[in-house]
Length: 231
Ligand code: ZN
Image (cartoon, rainbow, N blue to C red; front, top):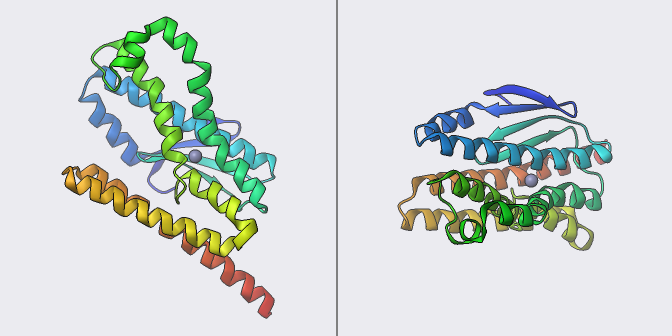
């Protein structure tokens, strides 16, 4: 993706970071070293989430050349679309499942390391290192939940499309998930406006555009199919 810098390779996939994400890192560094460590931790979990999508895609013969990390999340660039809804289902669900797995696997270790007081009662704070670690742990639950929202461009939108495609067709299923993405984005923007939070409004605009983009991709694919039939 343009405006991104390559960091390293993992399983032969180039991990790139978008320049806007680097700016965000600088912004968080100004908040202190714990914020920066938290952001690097989030960066690692988002990368592994995308790697899970990529490895399942590769299992189905879809090549993934690069993963780009944006402030809103990661994008795995796939060489082609999944051929069957069941493939799209597994490629999409594995990302949120990874974050859920982190929550389940590290539940007991985190509880004994930090103690229930730190782990459960004062989340979302970087006042101390244990709280920062607890924050990082719970971010996995947020990543899983946010990505499972059944609307484009979230993973849940793809899961929904794959489940609906068999019943109402790929085109209608895509339009439905795009529509839900738009409704979600508008709701999100409203929430941002009433809370005077410009960042939420910006994210809402991004979600709206990304949802539209999914629809356009589908339109292009349909047009190509018609063209081939017309030949
Ligand atoms: Zn994902």
